[in-house]
Image (tube, rainbow, N blue to C red; front, side, top):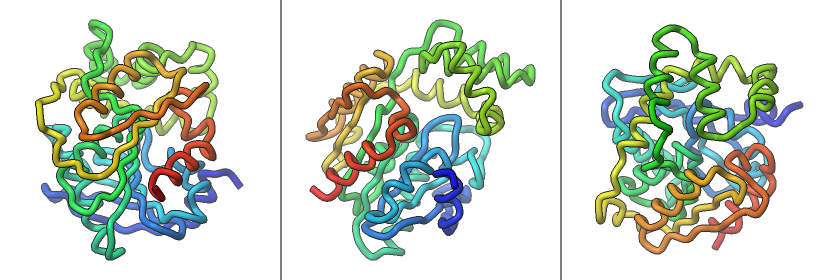
Length: 273
């Protein structure tokens, strides 16, 4: 049985209403202290299947589908602040269910959302942000080209633009992904890409915006990740009180998939500290 199928087979679901009424699906798995999980762009909560399997024996994971993904709803007029509110709503719901504090993990764009949510929510005891991307600058014209491709119904061109131009995958690596079982899910997520890219690129860190984060905060980052992501991670660390970066030698942006056992160890050690 694959990691994803194992995690899906065990998981139970409950729904949370965000501040604006948007329904958010949350998938529960494992045994131990609670960990809210926030996925990044292009994929829903199932991207964490291998990581959930590694955490299963020691942590109860609460993996949310962000708005516009998976089983969660969506609304017109997107702003990243709605994602911040969504994460805070899920954290509050998990606190109500478990009766204690919770840890939060976010990856990439989901790390942005986790960071914003942790500034709003109470009872976050640890925050782990893998390569947040706020303030990342995109190649000139790329976001416009993605929007034009989506408007023309060419979802594949939109997805390949992100994979090649931002994540720096080779065309051969893209072709391998295209032949895999998750390509259809990537295509389905294409309409959300440009709104998230624009939210990242237009972001300006205002002094004090994240001073409300009281939880110890760790920012793991891969030494092999694109430099623009490394730069964005350092900007995020500078905006959070007492945050620290942990470089993961030989790893890149998708380490939760390429080496989930290692990432689970990093998370476990930190949230137990």
